Amino acid sequence: MPTLREVRNRIVGVKKTQKITRAMKMVAAAKLRRAQGAVIAARPYARGMKALLQHLLPSMEPGTEPLLTARPVKTLAVVVITSDRGMCGAFNTNIMRAAQAHMATAMPDFRTSRSVRLFLLGKKGSDFFSKQQLPIAEKHPGFFNHLNSGEAAAVVRRLIDMYLRGEVDRVDLVYNEFKSVAQQRVIIEQFLPMVPEVGAHAADTHKGVDYIYEPSQKDIFSALLPRYLNFTFWKALLESNASEQGARMAAMENATENAREMIETLQLQYNKARQAAITKELLEVVSGADALKA
Amino acid sequence: MFDRPFAVEIITPEQTVLKVQAVSISAPGVQGGFQVLYGHAPLLSSLGPGKVQVQEEGGVTHVYATGGGFLEVRDNHVIAMLDSAERVEDIDVERARAARDRAAERLRKHDAHVDAVRAEAALHRAINRLRIAGVS
Image 1 (cartoon, one colour):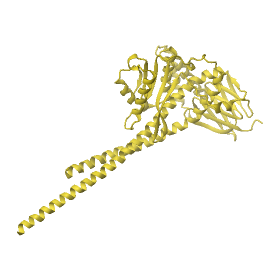
Image 2 (cartoon, chains in turn green, orange):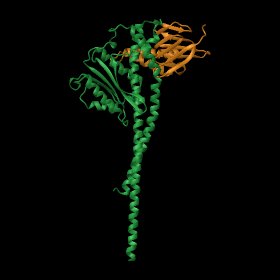
Image 3 (cartoon, chains in turn cyan, red):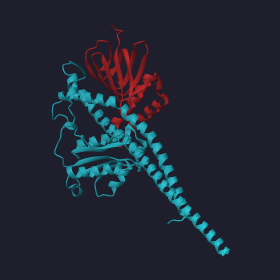
Image 4 (cartoon, chains in turn yellow, brown):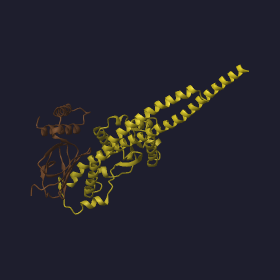
């Protein structure tokens, strides 16, 4: 049985922790709102880009655009998007596990053959994979502390360059998609060569309309490609960022709740110990008085 | 005929900038600027850096500096997907000047580390912003 003072100290300690987790939850909630707003604000553009791509794609002759042409994969680049900060539950663990599993399926001998190149965005992933004997092409710890489209575009440009130079034959993204505040989904998505999903309904809306193309379909398409890739990458970053805040909010909510339960149990223990001490003292007083009487 | 309104949307990766009924929109096509009025034929154009001007149904005019993008016209519905759209009122002249000078400096140096294509694009953007803001 812990002493009264010990229990009291623990209650104070847990209360302090609870204060921190509650504050972190509030901060995450505020950041989440902003991140979520950014994801939602980007949707019309995303829709437009996709529609445009599907519209122009049929005009492209297969094999003419290297960014669209798949080749045998000898080297695979994997872009792993994690967070900079912890305290967000299984957010990062899920991503790192998925990334490893993905590498193991795509490149069964990836640990020995140096057939993968890692691009690590976010401190957590950088730390984790740095400890393993895998070729890291780039790591950006602290990427989300100053998330901006310029830096993202620079990474995309380097990925495209590597792909065109033949240093990698495929680029995959691994990131958390924002489903809801409480739910994230790990997405593994091929980035290069591009695999445009051909949606039937989008193609229909453009069918039968005789467009004027300025300058030409092909030129518009080559102007669209880099923008599309940039935006796809940027969107993955926004999704991951929103997911991170959501995950942190949920994790901190749980932690605050656990702390509350813990305080309750400790308080009960404290009350019991206090009651026992009083009873004991009373007993001593009474028995002392009895002894005097006798 | 020329003052009948049609739908205009200007969207960027960050947000929907403008969604109005307008009577006219002009944009910097890569092969030269053009204007779209009611009843324009279906068009798909890529845009270069320049000025996008929208005249709303009541006379209000919006002017944006853009870095480029795409514009689609179909059934009297215009969607402009721009890399960036900066309201002319919001252009920070000092910053644009500084950006222009920085980019020019980078190009002058011919350093191996300098991405010439990028610097040139930055230079064009800055000059474009200044031109639209009406200063140099």
